[in-house]
Image 1 (cartoon, rainbow, N blue to C red):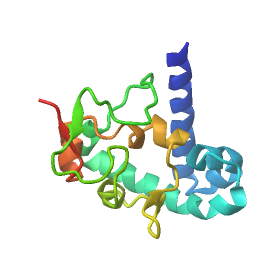
Image 2 (cartoon, helix red, strand yellow; image 1 turned 60 degrees about the vertical axis):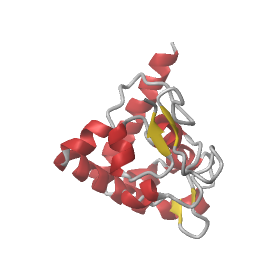
Image 3 (cartoon, rainbow, N blue to C red; image 1 turned 180 degrees about the vertical axis):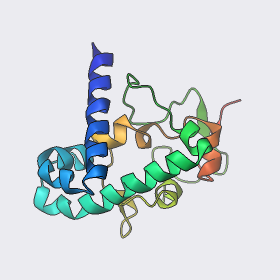
Length: 163
């Protein structure tokens, strides 16, 4: 039953994402409570709406890279029924010997956010505005990294695959 729930939630997000792309962000405003809850985990629409258009543009950018770069496409293939995650799978990755910060902290690295030009990165604090939300847990951020390709693509100084 959980797998059906995870699948339906991802499908709903795909529909929201595609409709956001096709309407150039207008759908995010029309469904503002859903968009706000999905991206920020709250219903503070007045506070969050300024991120809707930048997020819609990032969907277009991600879609374009996904279409044109097979390596990128392969990196982020998630089956619909994949369980949400709030941390990477410690059975397949480990901290590098050179990592100085806490295990649950990315320090001030944010290379992955900068590489994809994520509009949900607060550049003043270095924190993700979507941390631990539906968006973060159900897609790539909450499970990052899960392949060597991801670690290499983002030049991640924190993680390495277990051997």
